[in-house]
Structure formats: C-alpha cells, structure tokens
Image (cartoon, rainbow, N blue to C red; front, side, top):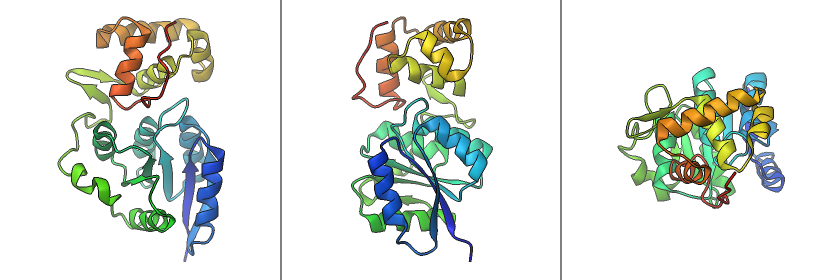
Length: 225
C-alpha cells in the first residue's frame, strides 16, 4: 500500500522537526518535504504532489490561508490540513470557505495529528473538538466561490493579498518587488489600488485590515513607511 505523503509547511524549524519526528513513527505516513514559507509550500506542492499538506496559518511571504487557496485551486487532489495556535472566527471562516480539509490546534496531541492526516486523506474532514461546532454554517462568509478574500463589497485577488501581506509585514516597495519578482512601479500600482479599493490610505490602516481579515497575525508590529 502506498504511504500517505505529507508536506510540512511551518516557518519554525524546531516545530517542523518535532512534527517530522512524530510522524516518522506513524505507519503508512511519509514526510516528503518541508516548506518554510507559504510561497515555498505552493512550489513544493507543485513539485512533490503530496497527499496532504500540513499548513501553518502564520507563514511569511505568503500566509497559510492564501497558500491554501492557491493549492486547492491548482492541485484539487491534495488535501490541506491547517494548523494554528489560534481559533479566531476569522481563521475558522476562511479555512471552511477555502476548502481546507481540516483545522487542528497546535496544542493537540501527536495522535490527533496522525489521525487528522489519515482522515483527510480518505476525503473526510477533521477539526479539533474545540472548534467543531463553530465551523458549522460558516462557509462562504469571507471568501467567494473563486477563493478571493472579501469584506462587504471589497474583493482582493491572489496577487493583491500577497502584496498586502508583505506591506503589512513592514516591507518597503523595493523589497516587495524583489520578493514577488516584479518591478517597483508594479508594486506601487498594486499598493495604490489596494488603498483605493479598501478606502484605506495609510500602511497602518492596511496592516490593521490584514490582521482583521486573518491575513497576518495580530502580533505583527504596526509599521509606518
């Protein structure tokens, strides 16, 4: 029987090593790769085609929710199991709407992680007991059918979410351009379009919006540039 292949997407090396060590003792499960950023998770999914991606929400360069959206769109046969230390409603709503197969709190046991991987591989869903009831009837509130973030009548494309995250993380336009492989002018155009679309006209406001929408976590320092 073929093993369940797993890609670990987590930006903290010590946590990844812990997950790998736990899963190495689980029969029928094989860790085939590790990703440190959301963008790397998407790239490695394209290369490795794992059965399951275990995805942390708080990922640099591309947050875990947007990485999940891209993976589910391009690789619908790959299951995504979200991991987070937080069970905020904004995260739960988006996880359900994006088509992730489960949401596991990081404080769960190692047995729960292995069980969740096996369940989502079968096509089932798996949510930590603490949030199961809160998941019901939440799909579609913050994300439309195309997987785009929305708040009221505002919708952000995948690239706009990437730009917003990098700006909210305090990166200047030049660094954002380098991360995305585009020109400085292109980033500036995206930045101005974001501000116009969201009717937010400063970086601190964009950062607060990104926190409210679960695009970045609330422990990110507000940075004025």
